[in-house]
Image (tube, rainbow, N blue to C red; front, side):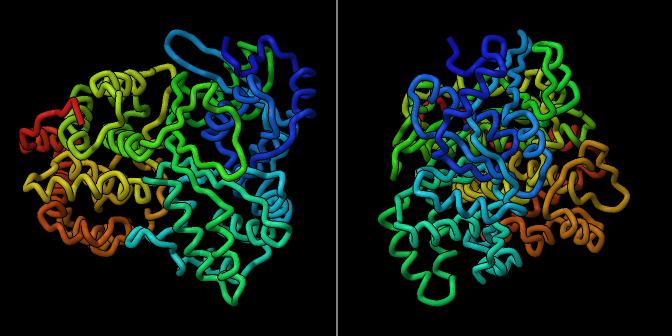
Length: 504
């Protein structure tokens, strides 16, 4: 039996009584759909089989929408698992409080400092870590970071909020705590630790030195890998809950049935029984991370950008196009896979087919514009190391160049090229900057050089790879002149004959 509380068998009164009995022990930054369909469901499942002080205080960054709705619904919401074979509903009754970090900062800092809080977890997306894409270090020039480093009483960034909480925690006794990143960053725990330490080192006065010394002995940063496709909530999601359960839920979460969580077992003050409900504790997290970041996320990005340029609304519609599926399989097998050391026991043939099965889930309707969002933060992590590995071996990775070309065509199309409504719907923090470059560089080759040299997206080490930059510019030219299908043909024709690797 699924250990998650099921709405069909758990009436509202029982669920609210269950919430009343919960003791908060986790503060989670980022109250979006992914957290509510992933970490929250695992935690609810773990509490159902092994009770403990692991209720979640969830903090949205700025938006009140989910917070207000959850408060009106006694902190409850529905996770709607969608597949072609049917729909299942679950209510993960695990949040003890929800708040808006930008408006209720004092409450958030108090919760982070509370000795009852044993885990601080995050799903704030890659951009929430405020690092410089050029160096990977803390972006100390960012205005929000500058404000937070002045020990603002209303810190704006997740790093600033956590450091303020840790400062107060140290002052009130220094109870140990774990900071658990659940975002798609390579070595996300180690990266978070580095950024926190860089932030603390930049604090004025002697306080930073004292906090730095305390961090090393009292705060752990386990690496983790998370995986679940969680689309945006739509009117259809709400209608499914209304039809299936007879409930009005303002903020249900659609999700695929699949879920994965790989965690390094390094917790300073205990943890829920996640291992009993499907999470895996492993010392090979970095292998799982790279496998997911490249094979799933990297390939997903190519599908999204090619699909958007082909005016396909969803990922299933995109991957149903033979040329897009062919490009996806080529980049996965020939350009991402050879750069990986796979986790022990992974059958790569099965894993590839599982990915394509998930991407073909037509009932889920994952939008190309959602998957393509924030490419300026995501793509450098996904393509940089594989590109450098291939170039170091004298091989041009044409489909990685196609990924960059398709991204630029979507978010910064040269004058006279219309990328289509799905590409226009993609949101990216670098859009204004890249579109200004496109206005000054109407030729695709010139624009691509400008993106790498001054777009503040890709690290300088890639800008130095002239052959790759030129190849991406060539493929952008093909997209502009002849469309994405022609660019896929060009990449396929030019691709090297690297063989797929089935064993690490």
